[in-house]
Image (cartoon, rainbow, N blue to C red; front, side, top):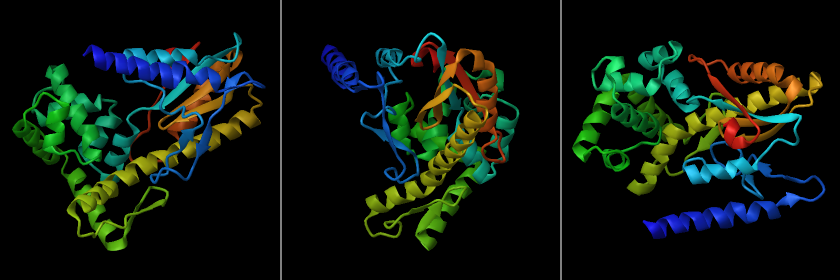
Length: 305
């Protein structure tokens, strides 16, 4: 345990604490990243030199690295705007799964709502553990999670995990049908596409190697979801960029980290900017499910997230 902790700390130190100060551009006093449109097959932006999309968030110590990212001066604050569960909202909309759509429309906690349905108990009686298991299934389904994979990620046995997945599909039958339809479409056409028509070609979808074919089948399900989320946030970014320019804001868009945008906001513009950013992101694309954006403000990125 101590060795693992040491390795984790050594990685944080070498990758971030030691490296980031050396990547500050002397002429601006800031760290600048390069964004690329054509690296990730899903259409997501990727970042390098340095990669600012992999600043740690999962561990308490790792999160402290985000404290190093601050607003430009005392007249500015950082604003983080994050799409809430956008991939689940997209799969609910694309599959037209009424039960899930209804939960989102009613502003329910989707993981608690799922737990209530699959465990057949009232919403207010869902335990933290049941919600956690439902959350793992909700996100895992998009990536084709198996009973083996689910049991590894939770305290469930493999039999319990299989039962949970089976019950999940019975609860959300249109979801399963949508996933099967996506794989069938890919087999017939050789590609799948996002809500805006971005294609992901899957050359191995009809391959003879079962492992490679299985990966292509998972991509057939996942790529339209991740790719649609990428399309939507790019539309929002273009709209916000135009509005910042037209409104002669001093506020700047700094970062895109998959489902999150980070801004350096001029304090007198804060309320106006919050309203504009949230509205632009939530109206970027019309789905059958409402998009929801959560905002956070702070002197540094950790506080804002």
